[in-house]
Length: 230
Image (cartoon, rainbow, N blue to C red; front, top):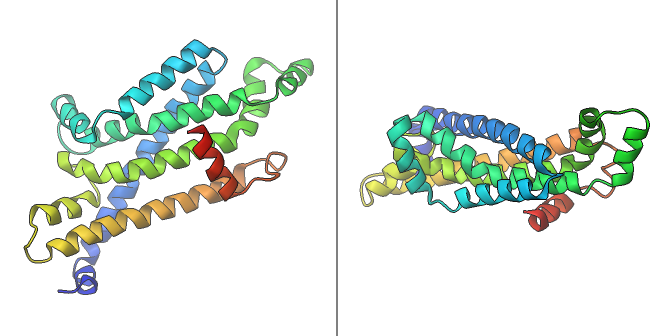
């Protein structure tokens, strides 16, 4: 059976698994973004705390994915829960680091001006500092999304949802009928989802980056800056 014939015969299953894969990444990134941005916003003015937060998230990122997922089986069992927890842990470092760096790069004169017109600390952060830092924060979100898109496939090891099941089934039955097709379809599907998610985040950037910050901003410039920051 050719790859195209395999795609046609398994179309419903593959679409369902692609939706599951996209869903678990979306949920994990939503949780990681909230945690990462809040952590960065709370610690960026305190170098020791921000360094601790970055160091802890960096240390977590060094844990092999198979090992972390295996450890999570005990308290969380198999399936969706350990997958989400692992993906959130792996997604935190770029988001926290970019939030800290983005907020720290805001010109102090702007925050002083905000205070001068009567803005409190929280209002200044929400209306002045964070919008300026948002392109850098978004770069961290993009990096994390691409990173955990591949790790989500490994979560099939603990019964997680998504296209990783096609990859694992194919690799476990190498030489069997359609084993190569299953592995290829799973891999290509993950790549396509990663490109679609990144395209969506680029669009989010165009729609949400303030016009005053958008000067000289482009997806390529944002990507280059993310490489320097992350």
